[in-house]
Length: 95
Image (cartoon, rainbow, N blue to C red; front, side, top):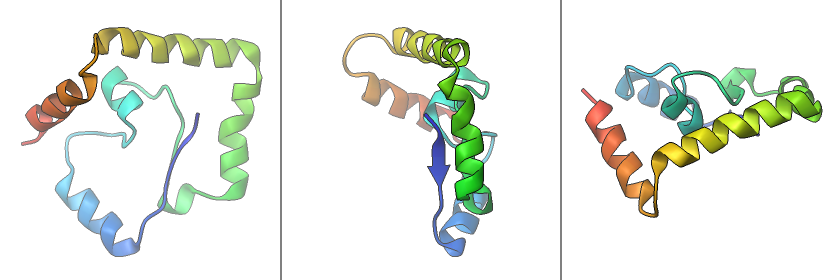
């Protein structure tokens, strides 16, 4: 998994102004409090960078570590209804 976002420049600027207090944009990374999944945002999102970000995941040990961390997040989210709980958590994090 590689998280990739490219939006209009105005949308990006507005998003950066409105969303504060997080260093990541991808929910897995926000929930983990660390970068589990590579993120390519705006100008970083090129074919070359996408390949470079995805290539390590072809190695079984790195892929297994990533899957284990993602599974850890899944188990912390709990039973069905996780989307509502995550939304509430995200709202609580907003200033």
